[in-house]
Length: 126
Image (cartoon, rainbow, N blue to C red; front, side, top):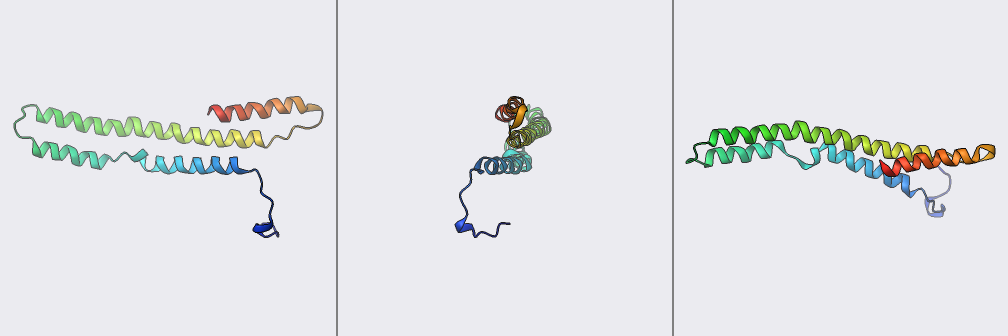
């Protein structure tokens, strides 16, 4: 760490990398919590419907369909979207850091500017 007390340090412009890492952390936390989807809570609602409805001849079919949708939604949608979203956040941070690490100088300045721009464009487009 720096020997300069925090109160005397100059303000720097490194807010973007910090915000990107915060965003990636929040997305990861959402993914860990399955984007708020609670499979058990929906199962309790299905059980409540199953126990509460008595005069319905297709009740068994409807309950089976509801359970199938509950299982499929979790395995198909939540898992797939978790993978896509976390990978997208990872790629955004990586591309930003790659682009931000290129400091164009010397004879290859134009090529380095292009490479930097390519990475920063990839960052913005995810």
